[in-house]
Image (cartoon, rainbow, N blue to C red; front, top):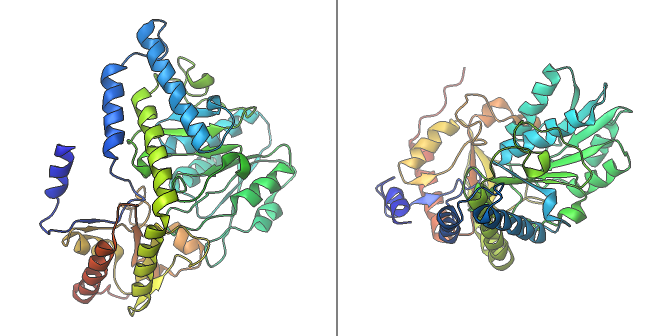
Length: 398
């Protein structure tokens, strides 16, 4: 971890570096890195190999899945498919289920506030002739279960609703929507849980979902690792052809070190959630209170049914990307929209979907916290934000 610490120290010149972009990625926990290194060097065998080294790796992979299944309350380790992360998990869940259904006429439902790895996947399916309905959200960014039910047709086969929105932090009524979908035997229900892990209590069996996506680097695991929950009996058409690994759903040599590290990261973040969740909520509440007193700031994240680690707001009359770079000069790191969209010039689809005007959406910033952030960092952020707002040139109105 020495190299990592040195790299962080070299990012900027101030004594206090504030990383408030944890929804984009989190720095891996030191114990997680050690688990990854140990598994990589001592248990390097291919889990598909017949010899002893392969058998040892296979046992570690099974144990990692067993731990994930236990921590997220599912019945069987075999219901977890190892992936490279959230994007692959979402693509496998959606395309896999749609193509696996093998029906001539299929109607699909999703929402207007999904992560790009979901929304772009549905757009690809539309291009191939599938009928897709994008359900709108209310002004606070919530999906109404009634709106999902109103969109269901006789040939609806698949519904996907994000669990925690990655931009404004709204916790969607996934359990109610899952129960609704169970009333239609032909419908498979998927939820993108990437931003929910470690932030809200998750009992996947109780949620009632058929498919659930996770990504390790969002909770201090290693990048390039994730797992997709696939309830036993759900048919998926593989994205990759090859060696038939992961129950034939995901061919390719498994990333055993990543899986082991992910299980460790999940255990650690669940301990944090249960023990220091109130500290995270206190920091988030402090930032929200201070922001509400600054003129020309509009807070987009609602105050209820929202995770404490995500807070989205706009500085009206300023450009979000300009504010990001201005704060960076003070060693404060925030973002504008989803990390997958932040380098594009387009505005946040989530903010537009909830009725935010394009002019206000231009000035959007997302603060996303971790359990390691402190109140001192929040105070420094507010102080520097005040300074930046005063110094950054306003957007020229056309």
